[in-house]
Image (cartoon, rainbow, N blue to C red; front, side):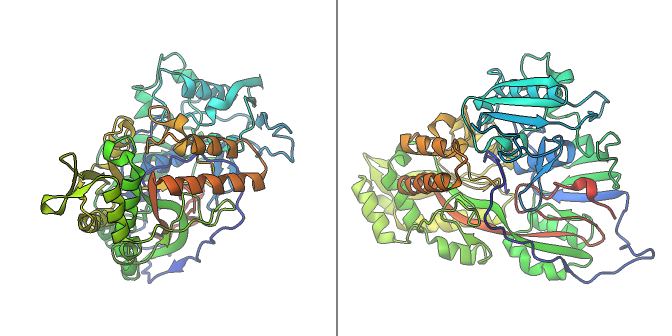
Length: 545
């Protein structure tokens, strides 16, 4: 995801999916016993350019946190490789058809698996789910996103294996808060945390209690996380006894670790410049798919210079985004027109901003920014100087910043680069969520449902949510809210079309590209299925050598 997953996940209603390309086997060299000499059957070595910012999903904003959560957590539901719900803590997925969702959409009945345990042997049940809702809504907790949880008025427990969720009003995306990603949080251990006044600095955030297939045994910050198979996992102890999750911040260094067989899986860190080199790897299989990760430019509309929509539109028109994709990103990505996955039933028809340098200059003239010394525009003596931020873990993003600098200077805008490590950029008190940035170039990850209220509504501006554009537009707020409150797909599609047209007109962001992603993994590894949504670690309990 890319770098973070802020979208509220919900019912997997997709009209079309991009099928995973068949597993492509490259040249291999097998040792005696049929395995490569570098394969370690009891140990799997993952690697990523990013490190989690927190292991408590209530406070985590990074993609790395989502990846780890799929190893150590048993949510109510998981997403499979195509974005469909897989019951985990739940026995079934409630729907209107099976009666799990009431006809008025205000009651959800979750039947939970009996006998599940935390790694310390304590029972994992409906009491933990109700406590998690209470923790999310606790005003003392700096919860990153409460969207969906704040619609719950009560969680009744007829018994320890049943949770009856009462809603203030219908919410079509409600099931997603019980999955992973966005505002989807796995159950928290009530027996360990319920007596704390808040969880902001709880030791659990760095040393979580596992409910999933693996147990965190050690976190060497900046280097690696170590996991052992969980003998108390309800599906049984996984076949692979140990997982090492290495942190290799430089993407080229990580790719070299693949060449030398120091790692078994690159956790979606294959960059555009490395795709052509995949054929040089030996002993790896690859999978290619369109994933729900989109690059975009976000404007901090609360900043004086960027509060004027004409300036934002000028920036959108002054950069040749098509050429940027063809050069810096080697043409591998699909042009994005909105933040809704192009294969989704809700995908709108939005035209891309044209590359129009002359038009951009006219917009800046009209906004009062007049060419000055050195070609940089000024208004009331103040130069039009704007910072842009991304993470060095994505080298192509850094290269794109350089191209943007050059093209925006031609329009009279001084673009200054100010980059941050992933864990800092997306931290709750970091530049994005505190509003201490001008432009950001980041990758967001979507869940299958198109619900995006938590990202665009004025009700979810930080610290109350993930609307880091700080745009408070009543039309977007009302439309995104209405779209999430009906189960009528045709009505939702029309509402999202209206919302996305409004976003396009106000330019709080420029959507650039949907990612064509490549997974590379040890070809001895069985049952690895790279995902289109959120995390390819979704079925880690099935992996084996």
